[in-house]
Figure 1 (cartoon, rainbow, N blue to C red):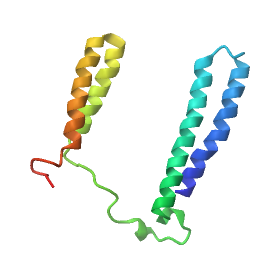
Figure 2 (cartoon, rainbow, N blue to C red):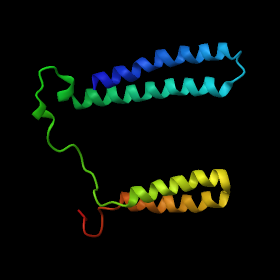
Figure 3 (cartoon, rainbow, N blue to C red):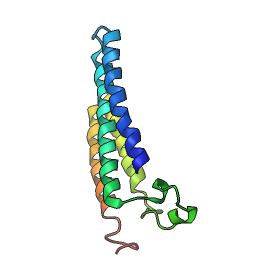
Figure 4 (cartoon, rainbow, N blue to C red):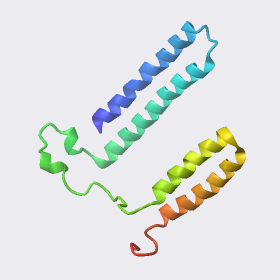
Length: 133
């Protein structure tokens, strides 16, 4: 994860001066853009720190070594739920929540309830039913 860590860490010294230059060019009157660019730099630093921390804990991957072979990256990459409908329900409830912010607060409350049900369903999906562990 060395490449990813460096890529995100390079974003910090880029975005912080860019936000200062942006503030100077707008005569410090447009604070949303200044703060947004500063936050992008902060988020890049947080992601870079996480990737660096995880890379030290996990060790070198085949992508990090020059002498690695293609077959070293094969195999199981994680656990994915191929038949799960809960991510779709959670995404639709998030979309409904954003709609509620724009159109009416009552939609936000309904979407928050649906999101809570979808999140619990997704977390406990493998605790009961056909796919229980």
